[in-house]
Image 1 (cartoon, one colour):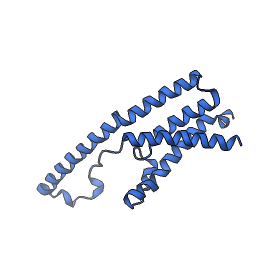
Image 2 (cartoon, helix red, strand yellow):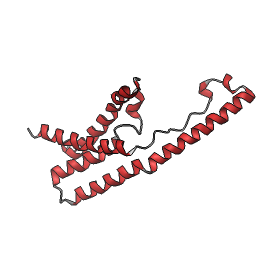
Image 3 (cartoon, rainbow, N blue to C red):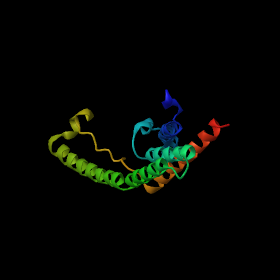
Length: 159
């Protein structure tokens, strides 16, 4: 039952949950559309990956101190995760968008030539997921989310 007293773990999981759920109202403010699928999707504002790893590092810092080797490990892990979110994963999403456009263009050609538009949507190929990675601002705010939520929860627990 020690897992229930593992503050860094719970802070990190809470940060993921919060970041995923808060994407819905943020998207609503931006587009006036409610999209509940954002709760279980990757990408978007704020980055739940960044929130999770910064919450983990912050929780470890609060429990073990800034000089602990475990904090160093968590911090390097957070930096690599956040760098990857803005680099490789973001570029993969950009390439997926180009591939999707190529598929749309090809499908339009096929539909014009062979009546593709008469097929049910379920028969058509699913598009590649383009919302894989994060813009730097999304990673930044995800990181801040993780840090501030962990500090808030730690403060509330230690009252």
